[in-house]
Image (tube, rainbow, N blue to C red; front, side):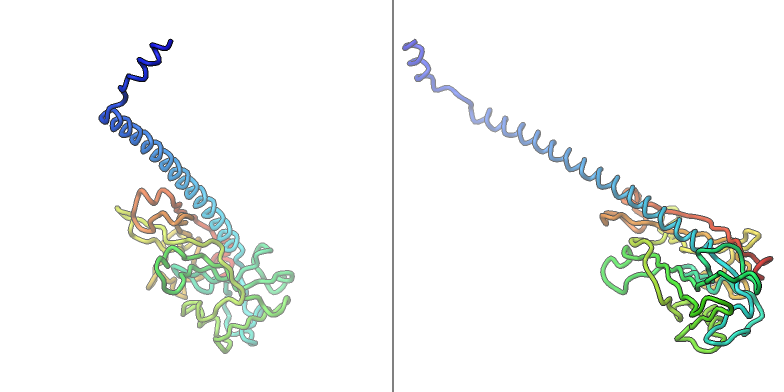
Length: 283
């Protein structure tokens, strides 16, 4: 046993420099591969989370827009007052303004059907605003857009319903809203339904934006107008509204325009909402 111990003490052999470097290289490769695997797993998890969140938020937005547009009602001459004046027009009104980013209309979200001078008791129709809006300025402003839901309530709960449309004045203020963007009369109460919204896109490389709101008449013919705004005489012809939008990724790792790989984190929606009021009822 003593001899063996002496022999081991004299043995100076061990790992050579080449063997040491080789071991370090192999270890480095293994560690790098493990890190890449973990990072890939984390990225995949975030991508799935972004996609699930986009789909969930998009469904919420689509359902809420459908509920609000589906609450559209008609108000006839004598059933409402604008800035204190009644009977300023002989026509029935439902949709006030229909543009690519704005839709304004009379609605009673808790009731069904259309009103008349004898059956409208119990209704509380609001002027309802649905619109897309970007923050003013700033880097990345596009991805911070939101769809807003707003309204102006009548000042009373019985016929004739009275609406104050300041800053517009006079009994023809509602007609002024029809000919100009509804931003001239802002809702008194508003909130974002969903944030992180942008246009859905089309085209060969997915870079052509689609309007948030498109309009078809009762013959399923697309109604076109300057800047995508439905001409005032055709507001009563609208039979259904198509809502288009894209929900961007919650993480911000996406592309609002035309990047196929990053767009896997987003979700685009298109939904047709058929109006229960039409020219035969509200014309």
